[in-house]
Length: 473
Image 1 (cartoon, one colour):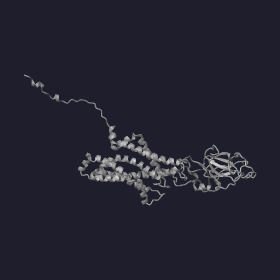
Image 2 (cartoon, rainbow, N blue to C red):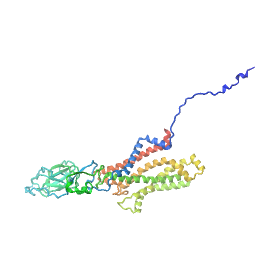
Image 3 (cartoon, rainbow, N blue to C red):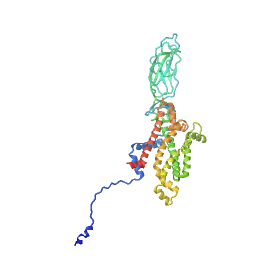
Image 4 (cartoon, one colour):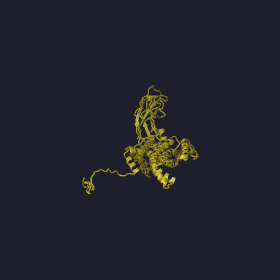
């Protein structure tokens, strides 16, 4: 007979066996959606650099005029179309007095015999210190000359066909001087003097290089606030510091840096306010359209398609007429209204597509079962979940609006002079781009940098806020 008690389990058989298991815990800090997006954005070097550029542009626009307190409308006709340069000194001179010139009594005004070949005038020199007020030249007479023609060039003449701008001529062979007061600047000039028999010029000429010094009269300096009120005699011959124009001046002598700062206010105001308004409208419009769907959605989207088909430029013209804005007047308000009324459909379509994807999610159904009304669901749950897409849309809409303003101002349909904007400054600068390229380069560069910065920032936000790209990592 088998002993069954030997196989019976005892209490010890049920005692717990403690097994030490070593496990590694991977701890990751809990991040919200926006915190994670910011961390991803910081790893995008191009987007961060673009963000810094946008911040600098905001500082340039808002704080710049407070630091650089120069009137953008102030015209300095003594410094027209000046290139960017360091601070300059000017010599205070006496008011202009007519110069009788030099007439040689021992030389006939009209020669008795006209030679076949006339020599070049000798001893061509500056009569006194040349200034931007006047340049006076003198030379020795040429035998057989009935007069002299004077030319001015900004480069070294290579032949008698390359003497430059004809300034004038003397009345006789005994007049051996000339005074130049035609738009003088503080740059080197090549003056050429050619003898003539009254009809033909000699093939030989003399050349002198003259670099006029910046000069102002005491009255001009006082009008510009460069010197205090004092006796004229005590300031003549003194050198004073002229106004500093780091970006140069335009064709009316206005400071380019000040005009760029105030122009940024106009360009960025239109470029930011208009997209913000029509993106907000498109956000609400597309949110309700996508949430209700059905027949209402069809009607709302067909109206959006109708708005897309409307020509922007035609409406811009109609708004200018409706507001009574004539040629040469700034059309900032019509441009803003046209952008807002015609720019929202793209945002509405994008938001509608996002809402259609999330309207059947579980948390939406749960909120509906708890009694949430339609307006609350759209504004509290659906639209906040599309904010990532909205931010990306806004960053791409801003450069588009800035470029639109620049284009309309360039063709004369937007901001009109003297109100500065980057587009209107380009329109003015293109007229002098060959002789003074800085008047076009600076505003065009600011437009290009701003548009590029916002576009690269939009690309970075797209990558940072896209959940599908985040799931691949």
